[in-house]
Length: 278
Image 1 (cartoon, rainbow, N blue to C red):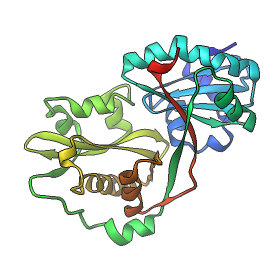
Image 2 (cartoon, rainbow, N blue to C red; image 1 turned 180 degrees about the vertical axis):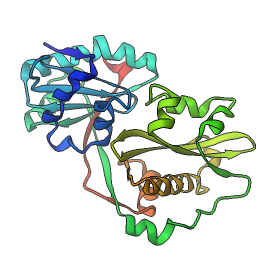
Image 3 (cartoon, helix red, strand yellow; image 1 turned 45 degrees about the vertical axis):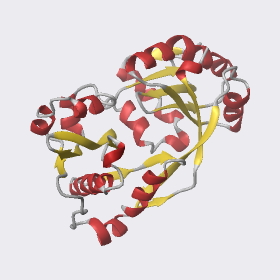
Image 4 (cartoon, rainbow, N blue to C red; image 1 turned 90 degrees about the vertical axis):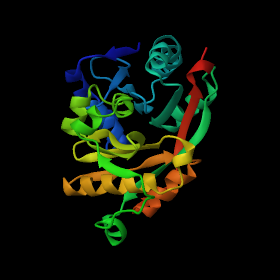
């Protein structure tokens, strides 16, 4: 039977199930209670399998392959997760599987809602490559654009609340973000053009989330400038930046490489629009 673990104190039972996902920043951000998420397990006492929901980011199946548990996952998605996800503004179910080949086979062959297989592109940060190009030199961007740190005054001055909305996709409050995370934005004529922030935080590990709003502002180096500022801040506080994207996001992959991230082998992700689940 699948049961939701609501008490953060119970989440200490999950790390032994993580295996290869033990260093996953997104999962650790949820387990630490820093970022938004929920956990469903096969049993409340001594769980062996779990579905971790990192809000607005990803779902993770971890632990042992338990057929009885897996057979209930799809109904859980349809009846419990889908309505809440749509209410929160999430439009797509994205799943990573950290378990056995049986688990991968189950989600691809035995779900009645056929999940689409895609690929995620992970990176590892190389500080030497970054230092050689961006440690002290600002990325040049066109006139009129300004890179600013997202501190309390900058966020409060955003009349459209774009920054706050982006933060609250992943954090329970702006105050919590300012205490445990950080970010940068690009402004032009008082308008928020883009944001780059720590969407998940596990210890001193920071997962980067970056957006440039409006196609007319893309291709100008703005995302690179924000990310470079983010990385400098991250290194200054003794942290490590993390970058993960999808295989079709060529611009994201190019920016990561430019900023000193080394690409690792792709791994599978399974996805489907929540609207298609029935």
